[in-house]
Length: 547
Ligand code: GLN
Image (tube, rainbow, N blue to C red; front, side, top):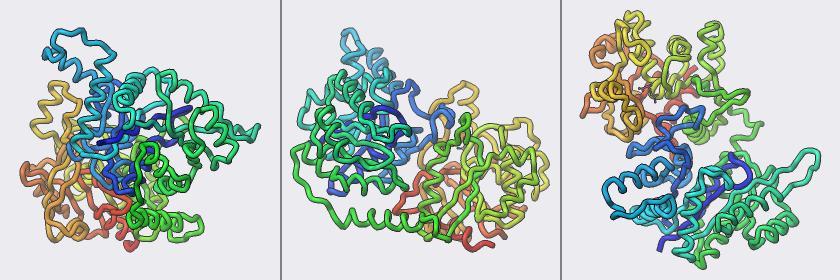
């Protein structure tokens, strides 16, 4: 009896379709439904793994090792549930399986056509997800904006599904209403056009979520209702707000949950206890985030995927940002996260002194050579000045290099990712990865997904997790080279977490420091607003007490 909700974007991209989808899912969950979500990315890539973060934003990794879109991270954070491969789809994935089936004669001699075979494959994937998750509601977020060529076949799949089960499918359009400066009035025309465009694909939305700078007034709602052919109650006002986590609460002010349920001809009651937990969290965030709140925590994040032209992109590290926020909020502090391009420390090492103004330093995941020496300098600075340091993936590898070079006497130690001829390859490729590189097998071939890590009792990490074995998500090719373990240990680096099966070091900690922890995995992917990640909590605790 699964119901399907397609979420499409109108007018412009970037108005928060992912957050809207996550919020709708969260609302339905508060009505005690089992909900799941699917993100559709219309590009030809099979997954997001081969794309530069500046192109695409963060690559979010699931437990089962899919390299996906950051929206899956939003879904996990809002629903407090894990997403899997079945929750993601790209044009590349769909075509790949249709071509595969054709080669296997699964179309039994038929001519395989773009329509209906491609939309049928899309529908098959959506239905498989519904079956596997046993969801009452499946939300399907179609990437891009209506009117684009790229997402037409996904819209076509939606149309065909509605034809197949008229009572089980609705469409929600997330639109945008501009308020041009000189006119000063909110304009509905672009939304009207977007709906007409959607109509030309044979689809009429049931609900419109109207994103705008401010709430919608009555005349605007009436106008959209008349011109877009929907009920006035089904126009939901979605003004800009401060925290993304407030969006479900805001949607509910306009009765979105009930409207969706009514559109399916259902009756349901909200689980007030469940909804209250979230509402209280949102209230807490609102209080903490007040600019007048003096309890501020300053974190420097040092990386390189920040700029595109004149714009700063924080999308590349969205899970890191959210994980910091979750832990800081729970501690009652307002996090101020600054982005520092590590190359400035290469050009001007004096700038490192600025880091003394921060409570803590993070070097997140990354690839390649640019900015690496600057990051290593920043790590050294945090070690020598007792500033809490948290290294995530590349941030762990570079911390190992820093200790090797400056405390273990291994001059020019490096990762072979940067210098294959280094005399001290403290970070190196495992054998299976050497094969991948040799054969140019780059797509989906890193060490991906969830792996167990055993933790040493006497470590800071154990204090954080309070567990001997934890599961964390990975996305990397290179590993700490066990040949150098002894030397590094003698220099004061503790191998605090190990994967027993493959004997891989997953956590390093520098002793005699308030917090100097590097993890080969990505803890940020598992932080949730109601359950901050233990290591981020411990890092934040150290930031508040270190100096
Ligand atoms: N470039 C490093 C590797 O491939 C680290 C990857 C990462 O930070 N995600 O091992």
